[in-house]
Image (tube, rainbow, N blue to C red; front, side):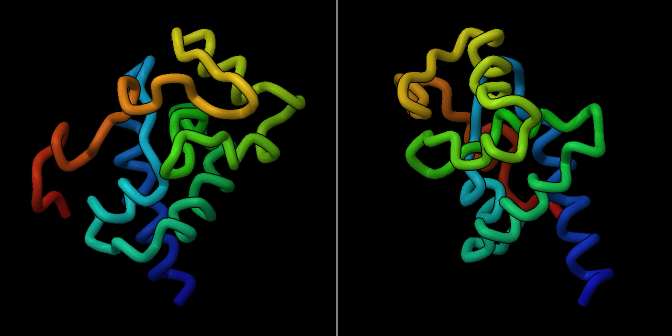
Length: 115
């Protein structure tokens, strides 16, 4: 099971690396894109471990309504928010303002059937 999780995590990281600056996606959108629609929580676990990689923009992955639910995994109280705001994304009360405008959908951006 561990090797299976590691493979899934690697696939999550591959997608997360593609999220452009100034855009965000959700745990569920990544899970769905990877063919594991009910695995949003596993994507969250993968993102928890993304801090050991400098090239994974984990701050760009939020919950399905744009809440910064993973912010406690970043150093400092507001680092996740600060990183997003540095990219031009406004955050109020841990919620991305105009979430739909900033949302990056892997299916639309990367195409269907990526494995």
